[in-house]
Length: 518
Ligand code: AHR
Image (tube, rainbow, N blue to C red; front, side, top):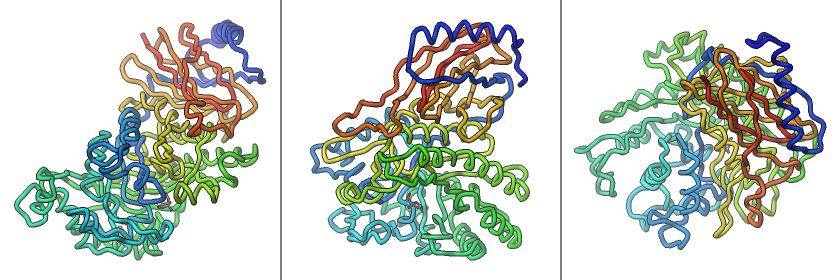
């Protein structure tokens, strides 16, 4: 493997530093030595903060009961949002938040969620349990929540059961500054300033819950809807078309082919794939085999990014159209009693989920030049959540901390890594740089083997480094309402010698190294 450090010098330095490390810490597991070279002088792409995006759907207790409690709740802030959740999300940093679905989006009619709350209609949520929603959380509430946590709003429009007029009116309502009936209605509903919403999804999963369409049928509707979504005021909308389910190249090819055939002058700005990592067990009962299967899916996700981007490149060589993954994450089997009590798709979150989150994020960091946005599903209580709530309790999941550990990458430039081991369960790594700061994120997806990792850094001298580690020896371990801080990041030893960073990763761990370069 090419490195910038001579092998002999490298081996001597590594042995010395590891001796120090292992002498200080003993985890009681076998450890393998692995090497990943970091080419700090070879930029591969900007890590847009939006690669760390999130998604919140009207599903289970993600919105109602999770993020939104209403103004009369003692746990809520003045806006009606769960105070603790807002605080945690603000601290994490949520670059972009997608809403209101998911499948829910193609059955959502935005006018139901504006105006005096008492007069808003009650609707049946046909996708997620047929319960009724009072629409007390609507457009204004979502925008206020985005402002409270510092997120850019991303609205998913209704194509499956809506009309082009309904979508264009929503955009005008949100973005036109003043003087039109819709802009004035927004003002009379309490928001004279336009919301300036930039990201608009034109449907969601239109191959499935968004209308069961063929790629050609969806393409026809996309063109029709997109024609009317105009820049109202000074906000140029960024239109996102429904892309494939996982790596369905047939959907993407047929959609792009239909676009070409229709000679559309303005292509979509974004094309969104959904990629879930299914699991064959309930979160706390995973077997080694279940875990290996789920964590191996991230190699397929990376392959999907490469192949989908390569296909789009044949139509769009200048990459004017961005590739998104606006839903991703682990989807385990649900525990029926939990779903009954805590809402549909309520899913506990383990150290394994955090390793999965870190592996997914590292795919995005490594492929930063090919992706414009990625949104994990979903923010609170549902699927691969950052936070879990139960009545007055709100806790941070291990995946929250995996996102926190990845945050230093945001807005930095990804640099090239080279590893001799690219097997699906090899150490997952990504590195980025800004001036003399180097960020290295790592995950060890093996449950029984630690890794003594040696990272020669090419193109710069390493002056110092610090590290933080998230780890639990039991891959089914979770933060619970009774033990919320069981899995939290801690300081971790890392050694530097010349151009070499050395760190030991216990099994089932996620780490970040922050290094200073000369
Ligand atoms: O995130 C849960 C569901 O998964 C979404 O509603 C849908 O888009 C996807 O199938």
